Length: 123
Image (cartoon, rainbow, N blue to C red):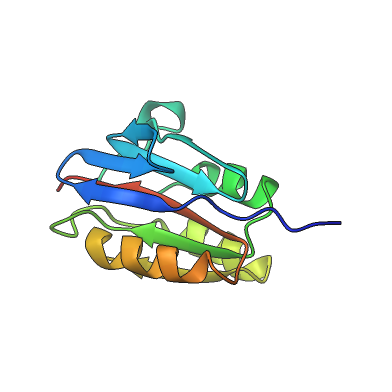
C-alpha cells in the first residue's frame, strides 16, 4: 500500500491558510491526502477548553501517525487533556505549538511522515 503524502501549507498569514497553492481557509484541518476548513462549530470547539477529541478523529481516520496542533498566533487556543490522552493512547506523536511554528514543523514533517494538523490562523 502506497503512503499518501500530506499536502503542503504554501502560505500562512493572519486569517489565511493556503494549502497546495489552491485551497484557502481561515482555520485548516490538514491530513494525508487532503485538507478542508476546520469548522469549530462541528465539534463545539472554543478557545477554552480547546481542541476537542472529535477535532482529531478525522486526522486519525485519514492515516495521520503524527499530529501537529496549533494554539493560535497569540496561543489563546487550548487543547483538552482528553484530546492529548486519546492521541497518546493510539501511539500518535503530538506537537502543540504556536501557529507559525506549527506550520513550519508540519511542512518539515510532511516530507517524511504521515502527518495531520489543525491550524488556527488568528488569536
